[in-house]
Length: 122
Length: 122
DNA sequence: CCCGCCGTTTCGATTTCCGAAGCGGTCACC
DNA sequence: GGTGACCGCTTCGGAAATCGAAACGGCGGG
Image 1 (cartoon, rainbow over the protein chains, first blue to last red):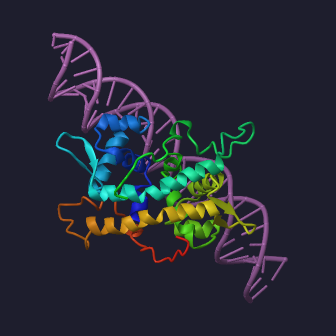
Image 2: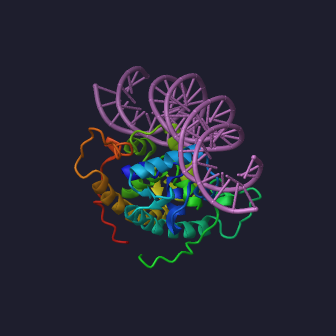
């Protein structure tokens, strides 16, 4: 349950997700996260640091701990579901003439990714 | 990505999770969700309704759609990870004399569940 | 020296969330 | 028929989270 609280915060999941490819510095990570505000960034980072999901390298970059890696892997099915979901509610762009049922939750700049990563350790 | 936004809101995941056992009415669901405020509840419900993750029965109860069920299943690995995680950062209560690294993210009333459910469709 | 990037902090403005009260409705019970 | 308990849902003022931009010192290159 506590995880639902930790990850139920605005950018936690996103940070976890963006760190999947490897360590990132503060500003680079910030840029990847839709340029979220640095204040919240630091806050989320601290929380994840506390939760031992990420840790900080000597060169001050942030990296997933083994525990964090597992969490990210645990996120894979959800990512897979998200693709199916997107395809279901927004088949090809649909006619947003009067119907915008889905657009409320689909931010145009967050529509991306397709789990192109190859995790052999999965 | 959009899913991270939809589920990155304060009670979305929790609602999805609490609906796993079957349809629930507004107030019962609210009670299950740590008595969250009804205003936010309605908001989340509307978002999930829009996303076609849940739908409303003729008796006005809320139920997971097939898509919602899949989402909930996709959440299983995360739930499993959460258990391991809890065990890692909070072995048995730890000594919070000067160290409180984990207590910041562990709400006492949200520590529960152990995926006792049986999902044959997994 | 200057410039660009870095990690991080601070602060005021905006958005979200909370919590309690209230609305109209149904149903059981007396 | 009145009363009380629950229901789905809305409204509203205050608290908390989030934003956005500015600023700080540090570091490396030109």
